[in-house]
Every structure is written in structure tokens, then in C-alpha cells.
Image (cartoon, rainbow, N blue to C red; front, top):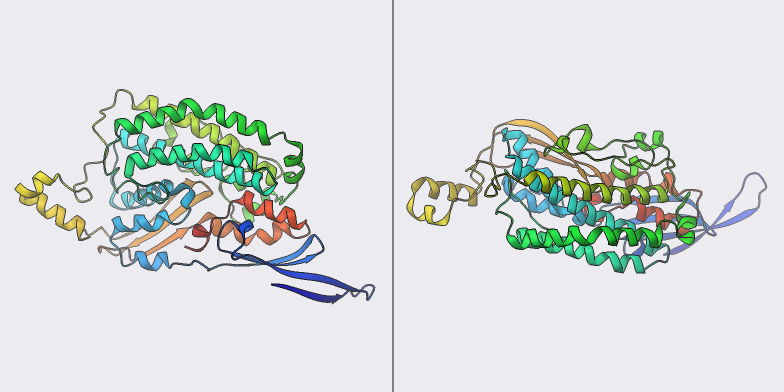
Length: 405
């Protein structure tokens, strides 16, 4: 829809024509089903009104009718570019409620998977910024290595995009030899790929001209909007949940928090690129920490969350009871109120859980980073060029599934 408006300027009484356009909800530049109603004057954005809810699926209400283990599939469909982080953030929330301690090996395995997911998420975000500035080659090149990450996920859990990976207390099965082989292949080849990706874009004059200054936001304004993650760090604030509130033994790892200065599209790109290098280093450290640990351990001692061996189900009453309770969602959890957050691909992904002691959550709220970023979109793009609004939207990495929930 395109609608022309005639606006009379008070200062000189000259009529000025602006145009109202719909960017979305079904437009390739939005990278998802959400909408901006934009008023533009030529190529300059005067104002934009954000609308959400096109794929709202009432996840929080659905969760009130699902056993705790079955909420995992809902979290998959938040930021589906890094679904395992969502899965494990939810599992940690329930573990926090019941006071479950995990073996070190389980935490290290989780760290490996979450950092792989972060790399995959950032690869897509940064390469799509390139696409929106006219550079398709980097996207088609690095996409192959995101697929290699998904190959690793598939060998762990059988799924690629919406993974439903892991269980409350750890993983549903141990890593196979195929998983370790695919992981080592990725670790051997990825550094050269990331270097080449950076050589294609980072100092590319056209890319820099398109990104520098586009969609800038100060540290103060970013904090006022409750930004977290790469978009906040690009503004110069070194907040990272993995450091501020460590989980999964992240306090045992050595990594840096990259920060920018201007909070523009270029800084957001640079921060994510550096974070991929840091994630790679974290995975290397995790692999070293796994050496010497019992490689048969892949979950905590929590029989109320883990299906017993099938042979035991057929021969032992206790195993049969646990099998029935787990499959039918008959496990009661203690009453309580907890909040747990993880550093998702887009920032602080939090779960606010209230339990009344039943078999399903009494109340569950998802703290979705994209929902918060999107509220600030008008401030980021108003007064700038329409083409800058497109690359700004790519750089804040709004994912429709996480936006609507």
C-alpha cells in the first residue's frame, strides 16, 4: 500500500508531499512477518510505526497446560537461528527451581552446543547485513558452515533448526563418535572461513559507507530501552549475562566481551564478528576441560526427568513407574518463583517461572530481546535514509518468532 499525504508546513505555508508505505508484514527486507508503517519524504524516513502480532502463538498461555519437559518445543520457536540456547535456558530455569546440580561434563557439553549456536546465529545476521548492502557472495559462502553446525546438532538430537535439544538435567543421549568427528572438522576449518568472510566485508569501502552511521544509538539510550546483547555492547556497554550472572560454569572460561563506541550498524557487525572468534575460543577451552572426565556422563542423577532403560521398564516396577510418569507428564515440581537468564544470540533471554506445585507452570513469561529492540526502531531510523533503515533492521537482528512468541 502506498498512500500520499499533503502536509502544510506552518513556517512557510508551502505544501510538502510525503508518502506512507508498508514495509512488511510480507516483505523480504523484514526477514520475518512483522510490519513497519513508514512515512517517508523522498528517501528520508520521517516516522515509522511498528506493528507486531502477525505470528503470535500464545506460547506463555500454552505453557500453562504443558508438562515442564514439553515446554522445550515452544522455546525452539523463539529465536530459531540459535534454538539450542533457548532450550537449555529453559532447562536451567527448571533446574534452578528444583535445585538440581549438574555434573561438570554436562555443563561443558552445553557450553559447546550453545557457543556453536551463537556462531550460527551471528553468521546469519552479519552475512544478511551484507546481502542488504548488495553483497550476496559472503552470505552464500558462510552459509555452508552454518549447515555444518546444523549437521552437528542433527547428530546430537536428530533435528537441525528447531532442535528440542537436551532434557532437564542434561542431554537425552551421549555425544556419538560422529558428533565428535563433525565437531573437530568444524573446528579445523572454521577459522580460515571467518577470516575470509572478514576480508570480504570488514574493510570493504562500499560496505563501510553503507553501515557507518546507520541506525546509531548511544549507550544511555540503549540502556533506557533495556537493550542487551550485541546491540548494547555495540554502544559501549560491556554487559554479558555469561559474565554478570554466570551459568553452566562460564566463570571457568577465559573470554573477552567486545564493545563498540557508536552503536551503529557497523559497530554491531564488528561486535558480532569478534564474538564469533570468542565463541570459537570458548569451545576450544571446553574441549580441553572434557579431557579426563568420565565420558559416559551426559545427565544428572535425576530419574524423575530421564526415561529408564527399556529392559528395566519391562522387568522392574520402579522403572515402569518412572517411565509412565515421565511420558504422561505426571511429575510434580515444588512451588516457587524463579527467574533465569542466558546470553542468547540477541541478548538476555530470560524465563520468569511461577510454580504452584503442580505438573505444569502456573505462569511463565519469556523475556525476548527482539521484542525490546523493535520498540526502539523508530528512534534508530527516523531522520535517516530509507536504505539505512533496511540495514539497521538487519543489524539489530529482529527475529519474528522471538518478537511475537
